[in-house]
Length: 155
Ligand SMILES: [Cu+2]
Image 1 (tube, helix red, strand yellow):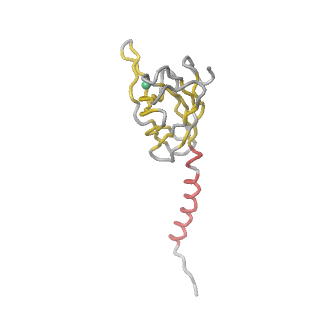
Image 2: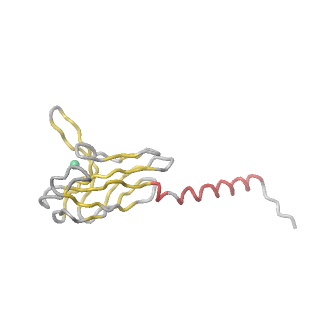
């Protein structure tokens, strides 16, 4: 008996074989560097966290939500200048370009942790989950630095 394989069938098998390993790389494609948060003084005040998202994939990744047990709400904000006043506003979805990164730092993008259950204290680590529109979610361990910290190296 002869088995005949149509050329189109062979082509689609080949495409499938290429596509599977590419999807398997999703998790490693997104990574986070230098996460840190600033201790909050009171539970009634929001706290800020900062991190840099790296995207090694060949397509953009869009951060759409953050979830953490320490805060009722976590949103990415950006800092804008209105006249002489600096204000923070919700940044909306954050697109991390293919092969690029988006950094957060005081005075720029930041994660605002609102409706805290309790103050977050220096020395603790919390683990928010970052959710993306088009790739797998990732969990990030964020160390909490002192209330006066201005960067990941500060104490
Ligand atoms: Cu903010």
